[in-house]
Image 1 (cartoon, rainbow, N blue to C red):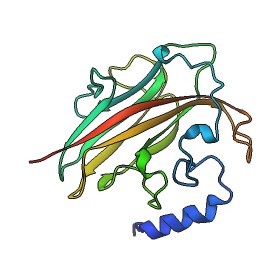
Image 2 (image 1 turned 180 degrees about the vertical axis):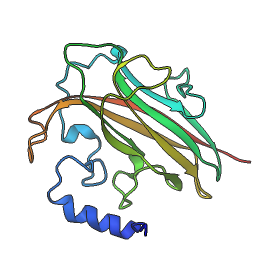
Image 3 (image 1 turned 135 degrees about the horizontal axis):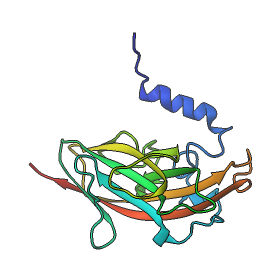
Length: 201
């Protein structure tokens, strides 16, 4: 028999491990009210050139990028409907040192200080607003090295409104020292803007 964990069970489990967890779940509004990933990590990696880095948001159905001419990703969804997008992160070419894992978090900066577990936009349902994934994914139409990709499905509920999110990204290699997250791990930090828009039927 399959059992589904309730929200309260998940929250309780997170609270139990919060005292020992130093890197995940993230400290951006979940384990702490840090503004961004740089509260715990350092940008000391060789991937600081944004021109050589892939950070993209694709429509799952078409594999088309949602990046608009203004540089932001525009995610338009009909109220009550669902839309699945693909978060793609990596480097554009092979290098002597490539990231081994990529981490990302979609966060509404206005909610970091709130008591809500989800830091996504209010009244928007989302199934995977954060992840930390080993590189090695193959993404149709994306020519790059050390890629990661995962789908995320969103749904604007009755109370959902247009919102602006940050997609906070860390490209990393190595391992953080437990209790000393600024030691042992190489990483670079990037931010992209994501604009959510509710379409009425």
